[in-house]
Image (cartoon, rainbow, N blue to C red):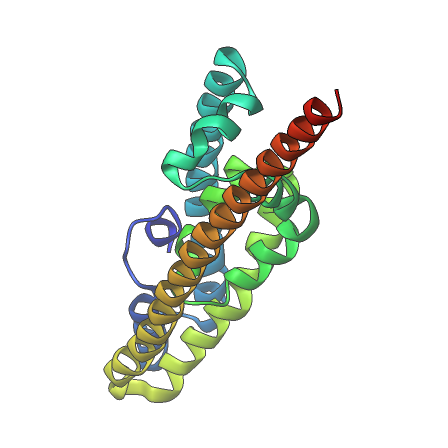
Length: 212
């Protein structure tokens, strides 16, 4: 669980149900498995949070040192970053950060990587740990209990949960496609607005000369 939350793709959909299977065999005790599963998630998330914070700090320092926000707004278009994207990034975790960390722990795939943007956005560390642990408990409980109920058939869960991974993966790809489409559409609108403004100013200039 710690490795998965540190962005290493070791699926808890296999680990926790197998732990439930071991509970069914009498090798493990149910509640300690649930608690340690959540604690492992928290430890791995803290590692990913620290890495994300470090990356964000280095980038923020470099941007601030070499020109600040204006540099990003000027050259960000070459890496698909617009001023609108910057505003969204600035406001997202301020407004939804706590809820995003909590609910992402209940979702396959997303829970593995949510710690990186949380670190980059400098989410309050204590709140990050609290919501990570809080969100990890239901997921750990559900998977462990499912493994306990399934008993020797716990491997059937692996196929079932991977179907959810596929669906969420498709949704993520569709989201990226939508974002790219919106991004290029916004850029086109900005160019059109700029061209119309230039044309209008040129027309005003011509009129002023003609009156003279």
